[in-house]
Image 1 (cartoon, one colour):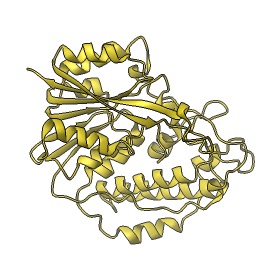
Image 2: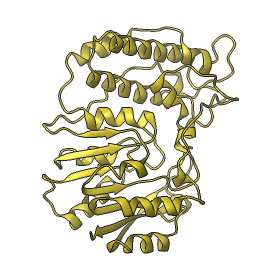
Image 3: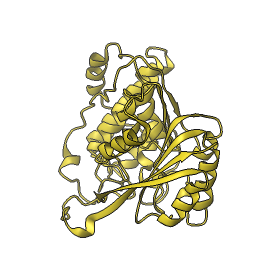
Image 4: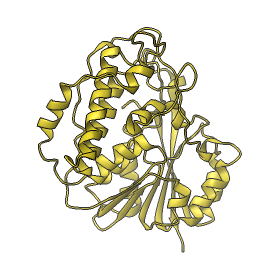
Length: 333
């Protein structure tokens, strides 16, 4: 997924830095990714550590992480299930509210793809309610649907608005593609809650923090993924069909500093790594001072290409570059 703040391209930088600080052997370590997003960082450490604890406030993120992190055993008959789902087409909530259809104004998906999303989502829920699939399969299928739907969405990457005309990728037919996960013998934990509350209830060795950097709320930018994930009934608001969404205090200049300091104070983890860039709401000096109160502080950094919704922009232009920091704390208790 083309995701705001994704650490996919920074994975090696993060991993190398963790190795340099903690050591090469993480096999007995508990790793927590508490602002998980699409879960890319937790996925990269899943095979390295004893257990991953993954959390995100957004439900679509929970679905992705419940599959990629929470699932650790193979899914039975997955290929046949995916094949059966790809044959379905049915009018439902997405077609009615987020496609042009006969009378609609919103065009997040083509009519055909809206029907396919509805049919697949309804069938998955029916199977779960009838106990025809277990929860591991349920979350695997939902994650597969979210990622497959995102590939043919008629947006400029985020769901704050739709495009006036169907772009080329949105004209393609949705093909449900399996969200395959790493199979291993370790059980992991996945949560869908406020990070500042969860931190009081968990403990481990390595805590990775990737909070929102700016005022953009993920619940607004990815509202339609939450709608597909929850598939609940509500009245979409306004031209863009927004739903009520969570508002993170990490996106607020009034609250971010106090929230961050509270999180660090309550963290029962020896090693803490914070991803943040030079354009975030918290200045680098504030982060350094806040973390230094609780132990030995250090800093690693790398140049990084910022997220751009418009893929046609000049990606190599200097203005598209930003400095990505990895703040490091070895906490003293």
